[in-house]
Length: 286
Ligand SMILES: Nc1ncnc2c1ncn2[C@@H]1O[C@H](COP(=O)(O)OP(=O)(O)O)[C@@H](O)[C@H]1O
Ligand SMILES: [Mg+2]
Image (cartoon, rainbow, N blue to C red):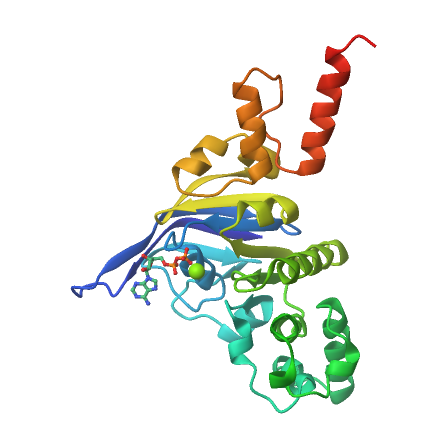
């Protein structure tokens, strides 16, 4: 479990550039949770998740992960980094080895595992990340954008973290690349039920399709959190803080305002179709 208590973070404290990025963050993310963190650019999403693997230490407050106090002055950084795998935004910029295989093997090699164990992990995590085995001997620089991103995700998975965090994993991809990465993340959740998976996004549409729990951030604070359906009941709040709710939610809101008796939390086209069909069926006496 991840637990954050009264976390505040101030960048460049004591300088003229001082800027508070997080205010009084309190949260609990249970094991097995599939959580999305959503919010406008600058709302503090990246700053928050960088606390989870001790890249950033809070100005005040405390965070424990799997019982480890990651905010203590003396922390076992190695243990934390093996427990919490962080896939940065645009992770493909960090690929650097001659082959994709070596890149994915980098983490497990540093963990001091045997070459058999490393080989097993590289192949297993490449498959989990949706990367074809025949790409392993290629140079990472020969891969497509989507494939590079999968290679970077595989490199983190190869360390078998208990917590997997992805910072804007779909940023810069075209719609089909985006959908396919989201599907991969969803399948990772299905195959690793104990793992906490957290991904950052600024698209409500992507989050609705993918996550189970949603944390909404606004200006360094947690604005609201809940399951997908609870969050979409608050479409007005989301719009107020500048988040684009899915087009289907807006359409159904308009139909409701025009007098149709539709539920408030519609966020997929399939659900909207069902609701409209039953409304039409109920309205007509056939
Ligand atoms: N290295 C930094 N130095 C100073 N301010 C920063 C730094 N990184 C981020 N910030 C500021 O902290 C706030 C939160 O940023 P960030 O966590 O990157 O938000 P998000 O990931 O939601 O876009 C923003 O106002 C941003 O300008
Ligand atoms: Mg960010």
